[in-house]
Image (cartoon, rainbow, N blue to C red; front, top):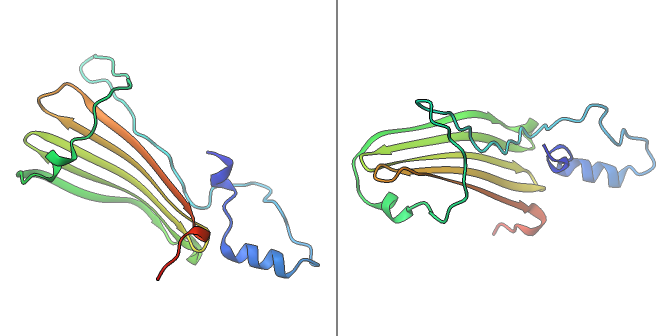
Amino acid sequence: MTTLHRNLKTQDVFFINSSASGLKFVKESVKPFDWTFTTDYKGTLIPCGGSALRPEPCSDRIDYSKLRQQEHIFFYEELVLYEDELADNGSSVLSVKIRVMASSFFILLRFFLRVDGVVLRIYDTRFYHKVSVSLCVCVFVCVSVLCCCVHVW
């Protein structure tokens, strides 16, 4: 876990610290922890049938046009692994979506974080496998935006 995850503060903390400069506050936590439940988990490779699996960089990409085509879906499930309202300071959600078709499967593991007035963050891990190819493409995407840059109209 990076210090960025541990040091996130709510918008109220900034207000309190600036308005009560003469008072003594505890500046740092004695036992810091990630109160946003942030995870950058990217998946685990499990050997199947004695074959060793190892990640390798490749030029293959997820075929999103193939995923958009009308195809019978044999199995679809969306599961929220955990969700928290962060003591009314935002939202933290980890979910997984699985879609299995005759020609491929697609898995999306998404961590979504919103700390009101502070940050929006999405960590996506996407797995895509075409049956005709002996390769599983894994893509990790991280998007983080400070809320001072976000305007809502």
